[in-house]
Length: 482
Image 1: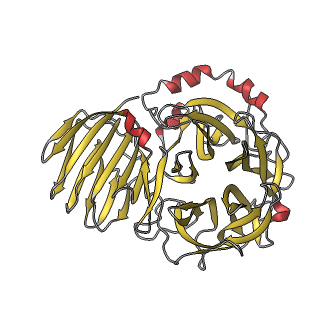
Image 2: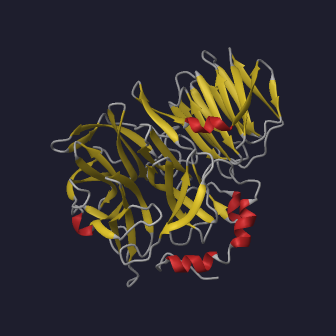
Image 3: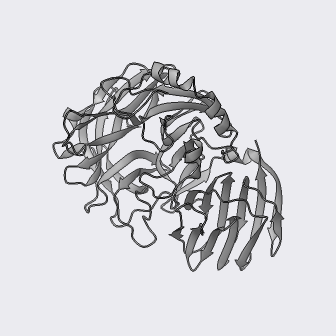
């Protein structure tokens, strides 16, 4: 078997030669009972950030970071390509972007797609590391991160690689970590946001502008007055229901009570824009809300579809996580979340599974009081109505509980989490709860999507599911199938 590592380029021919010997492994993985039914996960190896999300005609194109060579992710990273028309079944087209040039020789890192005049503009970060000395720290020295632009008419052929923004274009106080370009158009001007790390370890977002998506000029940055993490990854600046929102992933933020318990965070900020200047100010300071308070959520990306929906997909994983996934030993790891439709309500960023997911629902079983659903399995969609209830508890897997009590909604993994214990979010009341369950993954939404918790779970199904509550509550249970 060919050896692949992060020090060497990988071409399509290299991959094709390697993949030709992997059919037996891929077949074994595909038939594993822990494979997900309606989420994107890797055919082989490791998956992380969603990239290049775009709709062309009636087809959604989803790319993602992909290391097929190593389920523990020690190998180089490519872009894999999938398509779907319904967010339930996906066609895997295989890798389409390889770290095969001097611009991206050590990884085709995250990026995005933007459609203009019938052409698809892809932007991503080409990671280049130098190995000619042994004293590089790869934070201030020894690394280049190039923002690469490709123009394509065919989403399977991504076009010629050209530098759009490179190290010579970064402000003097920025180190070698600048990545994850995302594009926003406003008033005929294009804005590129980039996650960045200053030389004194402060996270921020750099903003570049262009009139034609070709020549980019540094304009400004988005930052907090106080230090909040050493690097802000995966920035996404978008307009939603008349408001401007920045989602990003600050690394190195210390835990604060129930907040920020994962190694790295995903938060959102309301932004006040002066488009003429341009300048972008974060409204208010203090503790930015988490996009998702679960164990396994990071690096989301959003896009607008033809129906005008703002859809967001996240990576169900987390960098530097101490929690484990038992599937690594069987050859694969990680997944993407279901697409979530975003909206703003009462100053809160709300997210609900795209309505297409509901097409998998079978008949509804309603349970009230002490009634239970027998043999619920691991594929279900449960909606709990519980306005006014002081306590609500639902066992969603053997030993895994969702519980609301004393103003806190908690996902408690007990001893079943492979290093995952408890994650909580503060809610003044619980009006409703939705648990969307795939074989080894749960996505939990509360109060019409005002709060979300996502986690992998490898615990077996419960023999019966019942709702325990103090106060009036009922449960609508749907089994799921393609």
